[in-house]
Image 1 (cartoon, rainbow, N blue to C red):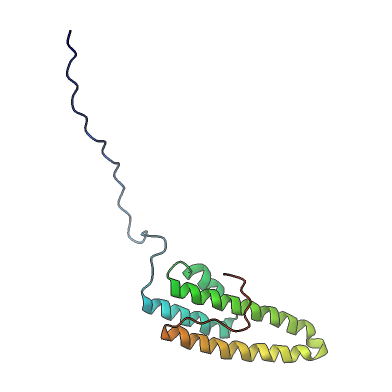
Image 2: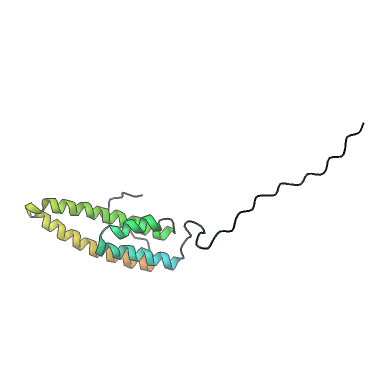
Amino acid sequence: MSTPPIPPQQPPVPPQQPPVPPGYGPAHPSMNPADEKLWATLVHVGGIFFEFLPALIGYLVLKDRGPFVNAHTKTALNFQLTLLIAEVVGWITALILIGIIILIAVYVVRIVFSIIAAVKANRGEFYTYPLAISFIK
């Protein structure tokens, strides 16, 4: 008795992926260097007017878009949170009058160092704020 011949096996065909609709590509495409510099600069300048909100939003939205913008949003958020703590201390101690001096110092420090950081970001340089507590590493 002879067995019937076995037909040759073909490799399995991988399942085909459906086409990706426009606008639904990779979750976080990287930015080009010019866009990274622009957003890093805007995060620092936004801190002058809106305190920690631009840095927080920038960090949450842009942290995965490139190493440069990630570093700048992180350092800006750490600095703005440090100043927020100083502001709270200033408002609490305002009744002793030292708080008014603290609030004025926070206001001046926020403007000066945010402008320095924005200029550095615009030049494509990394910057670390002095006196900032590292909440986010």
